[in-house]
Length: 112
Image 1 (cartoon, one colour):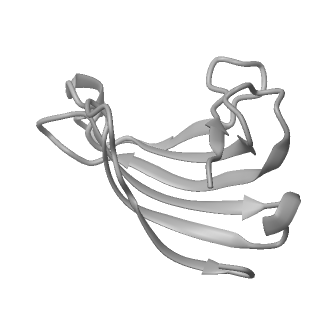
Image 2 (cartoon, helix red, strand yellow):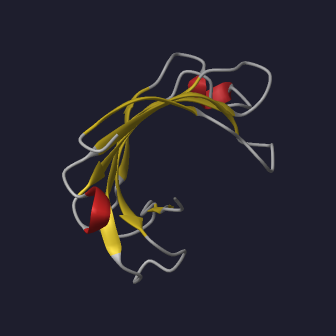
Image 3 (cartoon, one colour):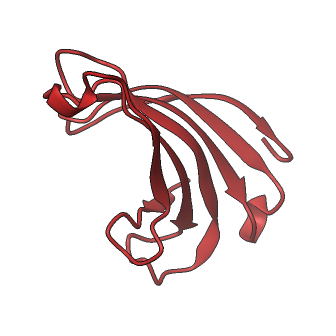
Protein backbone atom coordinates (compact mmCIF):
# COMPACT_ATOMS: atom_id res chain seq x y z
CA UNK A 1 0.00 0.00 0.00
CA UNK A 2 1.24 3.47 -0.90
CA UNK A 3 -0.60 6.59 0.23
CA UNK A 4 0.46 10.21 0.28
CA UNK A 5 -0.29 12.78 2.99
CA UNK A 6 -1.07 16.24 1.64
CA UNK A 7 -0.18 18.99 4.16
CA UNK A 8 -1.67 22.44 3.71
CA UNK A 9 0.32 24.73 6.00
CA UNK A 10 0.61 28.08 4.20
CA UNK A 11 -2.75 27.92 2.47
CA UNK A 12 -5.90 29.87 3.25
CA UNK A 13 -7.29 26.61 4.71
CA UNK A 14 -4.39 25.01 6.61
CA UNK A 15 -4.76 21.41 7.76
CA UNK A 16 -2.07 21.61 10.47
CA UNK A 17 -2.52 23.82 13.54
CA UNK A 18 -0.34 24.57 16.53
CA UNK A 19 -2.30 24.00 19.76
CA UNK A 20 0.42 24.25 22.44
CA UNK A 21 4.05 25.18 23.06
CA UNK A 22 6.41 25.19 26.03
CA UNK A 23 8.28 28.17 27.46
CA UNK A 24 11.41 27.19 25.51
CA UNK A 25 9.84 26.40 22.12
CA UNK A 26 10.58 29.79 20.57
CA UNK A 27 14.29 29.60 21.51
CA UNK A 28 14.77 25.87 20.90
CA UNK A 29 16.62 24.94 17.69
CA UNK A 30 14.44 21.82 17.51
CA UNK A 31 11.06 23.49 18.30
CA UNK A 32 10.95 21.36 21.46
CA UNK A 33 7.57 21.42 23.14
CA UNK A 34 5.46 22.46 20.15
CA UNK A 35 2.27 20.41 19.71
CA UNK A 36 0.17 20.40 16.55
CA UNK A 37 -3.03 18.73 15.41
CA UNK A 38 -3.65 17.80 11.82
CA UNK A 39 -6.40 16.68 9.47
CA UNK A 40 -4.65 16.09 6.14
CA UNK A 41 -5.88 14.68 2.87
CA UNK A 42 -4.72 11.16 1.84
CA UNK A 43 -4.26 10.48 -1.87
CA UNK A 44 -3.12 7.56 -4.02
CA UNK A 45 -0.37 9.64 -5.68
CA UNK A 46 2.02 12.45 -4.80
CA UNK A 47 -0.11 14.99 -6.69
CA UNK A 48 -2.67 16.69 -4.45
CA UNK A 49 -5.24 16.26 -7.23
CA UNK A 50 -4.81 12.48 -7.45
CA UNK A 51 -7.59 10.20 -6.19
CA UNK A 52 -8.62 10.98 -2.61
CA UNK A 53 -8.80 7.98 -0.31
CA UNK A 54 -9.17 9.47 3.17
CA UNK A 55 -7.71 11.65 5.91
CA UNK A 56 -4.69 11.53 8.23
CA UNK A 57 -5.80 12.88 11.60
CA UNK A 58 -3.92 13.15 14.87
CA UNK A 59 -1.26 14.78 17.01
CA UNK A 60 2.39 15.58 16.40
CA UNK A 61 4.81 17.00 18.97
CA UNK A 62 8.43 18.13 18.74
CA UNK A 63 9.93 15.97 21.47
CA UNK A 64 13.73 16.00 21.24
CA UNK A 65 16.08 18.65 22.60
CA UNK A 66 18.98 17.59 20.34
CA UNK A 67 17.45 17.04 16.86
CA UNK A 68 14.24 17.93 15.02
CA UNK A 69 12.15 14.89 15.85
CA UNK A 70 8.41 14.40 16.08
CA UNK A 71 6.46 12.07 18.29
CA UNK A 72 3.45 11.14 16.16
CA UNK A 73 0.04 9.61 16.80
CA UNK A 74 -1.89 9.49 13.52
CA UNK A 75 -5.08 7.78 12.44
CA UNK A 76 -5.48 7.04 8.75
CA UNK A 77 -9.22 7.16 8.07
CA UNK A 78 -10.10 5.61 4.71
CA UNK A 79 -13.21 7.04 3.03
CA UNK A 80 -13.08 5.41 -0.42
CA UNK A 81 -11.57 2.53 -2.33
CA UNK A 82 -10.99 -1.00 -1.08
CA UNK A 83 -10.28 0.20 2.51
CA UNK A 84 -13.37 2.43 2.79
CA UNK A 85 -14.60 2.50 6.40
CA UNK A 86 -11.33 1.15 7.82
CA UNK A 87 -8.63 2.86 9.87
CA UNK A 88 -4.96 2.40 10.71
CA UNK A 89 -3.25 3.87 13.78
CA UNK A 90 0.42 4.87 13.47
CA UNK A 91 2.56 5.74 16.47
CA UNK A 92 6.23 6.51 16.92
CA UNK A 93 9.31 8.67 16.67
CA UNK A 94 9.91 10.52 13.39
CA UNK A 95 13.44 12.02 13.08
CA UNK A 96 12.92 14.67 10.40
CA UNK A 97 16.58 14.74 9.33
CA UNK A 98 16.59 11.10 8.24
CA UNK A 99 15.87 10.38 4.58
CA UNK A 100 14.10 7.10 5.45
CA UNK A 101 11.94 6.71 8.53
CA UNK A 102 9.72 3.94 9.87
CA UNK A 103 6.87 4.26 12.32
CA UNK A 104 4.81 1.44 13.78
CA UNK A 105 1.26 0.59 12.84
CA UNK A 106 -0.17 -0.30 16.25
CA UNK A 107 -3.76 -1.05 15.36
CA UNK A 108 -6.59 -0.81 12.93
CA UNK A 109 -10.27 -1.33 12.31
CA UNK A 110 -12.35 -2.77 9.50
CA UNK A 111 -10.19 -4.78 7.08
CA UNK A 112 -7.15 -4.06 9.25
